[in-house]
Image (tube, rainbow, N blue to C red; front, side):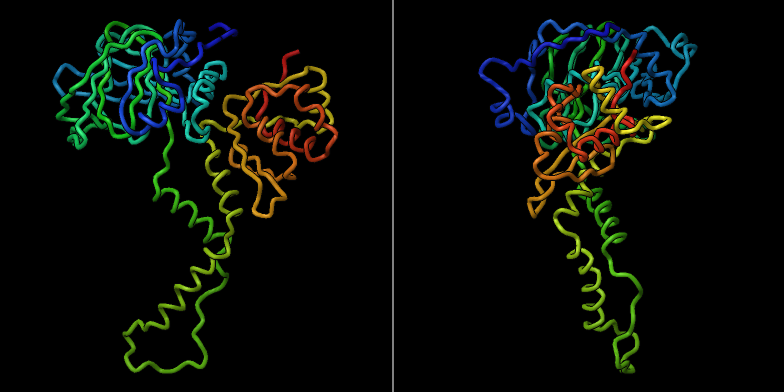
Length: 400
């Protein structure tokens, strides 16, 4: 794979731009975007993708379609070279998650989707399929952009507003049956198919091909509530246990759960919720959204660098690149207007509010250049932040 990867600018169909796309299609209707990435040349050969699927910290799977109708098999990586050598000549697909985090140069493609909030972009999944390879008709709960990177794939979708969504029983993958498509397209390199949540779709390779999926993240309300309420219970719920109110009076009906007790129990629990401020929620949410998967942990510097050495390294090399697994978001200002926050792989860094331009620059840039942040390097808060980020593994160590 070449080190100098340049992706074309994203081009919407005639009559559309990012704003009108969001107004007319986003989470409303599918959209085929012919040559949305004109001249796209796939920089990731299939054998390199297979090699990535052999790595122990890479999430991957192979989906094989059997000879019997409705017969599908899923195998999970990491794989070895012998497994790929034993695959049949057709009807299989290799899928590798989080390629943007393992290969930052590939992850640069996500910058073409800067018209969406960064926290909404989950990952770039790359699929390689031999002829007639597919994962079966299925549906996902999130938005997805299906980018044809190499070869050709025929996509069929069902636009029925209430399609049948019953999966074939007994399969690990959720293959839908029945599936009745009413629209179909053959995608070629550079084409993109946007699908909003809940649209059943089925892609089948026509010859060997590669598809990149920009997958969006939409947390379930129950998941958010579970995680936030666990935080409230841990940090804000009153300590101790129930104590009977004084004076204690013998109940006339011992089995009754009286209204006063119900009110007292509920009030104590709600006191914890009331104690958590909007800043507390923001701090938890930013940390939670940037918390990496277990297989995507950063590698801290060992031994750690001193803050002065980190700054000197930046002065010498002029730039440092983010590790692909680095996830940065920022928020601010706080309710009192005094602070902004930078969230980094589950950690929250609170900084003076006048540093908002800096935290925005750090979070939005794959490369940090000395000339762009030099006027902040005299401040201890900034030097300390850079040292903490570097030692946590957010930046790659420059090569000599």
